[in-house]
Image (cartoon, protein in one colour):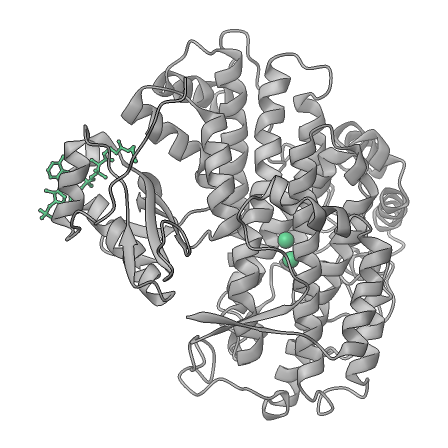
Length: 150
Length: 442
Ligand SMILES: CC(C)(COP(=O)(O)OP(=O)(O)OC[C@H]1O[C@@H](n2cnc3c(N)ncnc32)[C@H](O)[C@@H]1OP(=O)(O)O)[C@@H](O)C(=O)NCCC(=O)NCCS
Ligand SMILES: [Fe+2]
Ligand SMILES: [Fe+2]
């Protein structure tokens, strides 16, 4: 599965993206965290590598979106798509890279029998919430609860 | 898009289980500890998967657009022979790689790396099982006199040294080989599976997507430990050096390049609608991907050596060291890792026995070339019969006793794999008839 326009190409994640994704994260967050991405990408690659996607322009990775289908969590018995981690190169924001990634991921989830797609957004990250709203997401009937243990 | 799960008839299933008990004795350990290493991942099962809803029309070649074949007897005989060769080669690699990995699995220093490799081995078993399913699920009598049951038996009786493809006959020397093999040889597998996914024979095409999903993890099981080793090497570890990793690349990459088949071949598979790319094209893409992998490893090393660097600076410095071969902040070209030249240490295909050095330099006598190789290859490998076979052939080619083409044809010492079409130039590895359908995977 890969979806192309003139410059932007969306394709499944692969092991050789590790360096580029670590680099994108560093650009976004300012931190170099190779082990974190080795663990994360290892997780997505062993579960369903086709569900997670990267966006490329001329062979350069400019965005990624990691997710998968799960069932039986949070009382959601139906197969449910989850968008879990994403990032778009700060220099490439606002050019529909995120939208294209999300659309491709949703199409994949649909093809695999998922009837809905979920994500969790930190209340402080309004931009990300706006991004999902622009894509047609609505607040779900689930409220996350948390209790600090330390 | 969904997958259908099946099992092969009990008699054969039991034979695979018996094979597993011999060559994958840690299988029970894997399943007993599954939750510990792979929490919430779907449990492993010895079964065959096929994807539903795949393309119904032939995707390339002379009959593009016509319906895909669902029975072997509907293919024309040469086409069917190529296909059968491909399935058997594929099956051989799947089982073969388990036999290689098991030699050094216990030598891993890191428990998690070991668990990943063990899971990968179980998945290779499943891939082999899928190929047996293809052999047992159809009637191949229009192609070969060998009964499906005998083909299965033949595959399950192969051991290291008798497999169809060269890379699967080379023994592992340490756990560095386990990871490097995954990163380099399974990567060829990914290309083969990706190409076979368009196969005009629908059951074969439908077997590929579930295998490809697992293959992505096999590559990760190689590349993640290698990246960590680069970091450890940069920190002066006593356990691993970049030289160890370089030598493992030198050992495996030439074999990986050869798995694509002769650089001049592959056209027949394309015409028959069995693969979308000729050998040289696929091999070129593969080599470029290995260059990316190597750069990624070097970046990991450089950032560990010079943690104060930001991404951009690190990229510039890496370019300087690799492209200009400069020493920057004490880091030399030699202490990083590099993909050897495409023609280095080749014994199959266009550059076979051509005596091209690691850096692309030419040698004109066998002794100096072998001396060069002996510096570039791992110590334990130099002492192997595989290297000895190569050295003997090289001397004969250099001395004019045999042609490079003849030596290449004889290269792996092989048993009969039969059934493949003797006309094919695209393939290799089968000593008796010079042909089989494809480069295989694992
Ligand atoms: C959120 C993010 C993925 C958006 O990527 P992008 O490529 O810039 O988004 P797009 O250009 O595809 O935008 C799609 C839609 O979302 C909207 N949108 C995107 N970012 C927005 C923002 N910050 N505020 C408001 N709306 C926004 C766009 O206006 C657009 O709407 P439209 O299509 O109706 O015009 C990107 O900004 C990002 O990577 N942010 C950081 C991610 C992060 O912190 N990850 C770690 C936690 S998972
Ligand atoms: Fe495999
Ligand atoms: Fe594999």
